[in-house]
Image 1 (cartoon, chains in turn brown, cyan):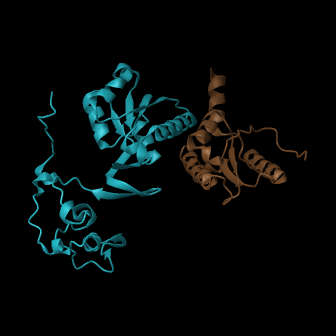
Image 2 (cartoon, rainbow over the protein chains, first blue to last red):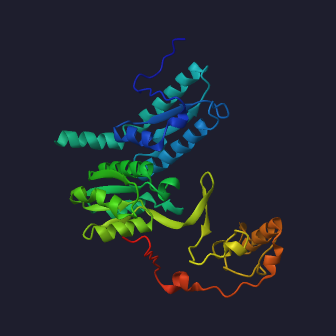
Image 3 (tube, chains in turn red, yellow):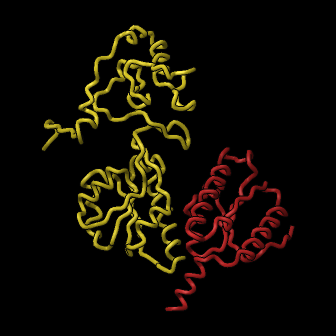
Length: 119
Length: 222
């Protein structure tokens, strides 16, 4: 299955989305990421029962914080699919990529660039 | 344990906006357990503040540190050597920790990062409920282990009052009537005879009515 996916994102593998914490998402934005999406197993299918539910809550928490600090909560999103759904993963990646392209670069990245240019 | 709640980030931003070098100081005790002011919350708050101020074009130095406790001299002393690196400290400890740090570092502005709520238990994931008001003279022995001071809205010591309906308090249908719980428990214990005994007038001087309280233990003083 050779599926085309956008090449402008980095995949960070975790044992379970339950491992993803709010701080991991925030750090990605602090380092200049334009968007973050968390892809977990189908709800109800978590090997650890609640891992993907925890992840969803944390994504929601991160979105709230990002809204408050002016980055925008719409830049972070949670998706669910099963490990056998490669085409769906590709589809979600394209969907997320299009959305971020529409939103443009993260204000943090722009502010950091401005600072670099000024220096 | 002491239950606290995170302050809204806007409120903290407003308090720290005029400082340039800020230390976010967490506490490893109660506020860690109630997920309001531990190492994780310090990291999240610091990251959020850094992003906010970078976005505003006003980059600040925002450092993170979490102490074992902020209500003991020895742990608070750990930051003395680099206290001069900062213009302000945002403490995520309970009100005790914030005040103790303020007393120790006289010229350092201390900003609370949490609202201290009550003494409570972790009843369920994401639910903390009050269990004690630290009234200073415990009556739990004769109320079946359920506290009428903290759990009855009126602090009635010979209850229930007329506002108890179907086991709920008149202030809200979501609040259990403490005296209903007490009666249920005394029945289960087979100690309903205790219920018939009229409680004497409580000595409220050990509560806040007697002013700020202290405990002095000569036997442990060195």
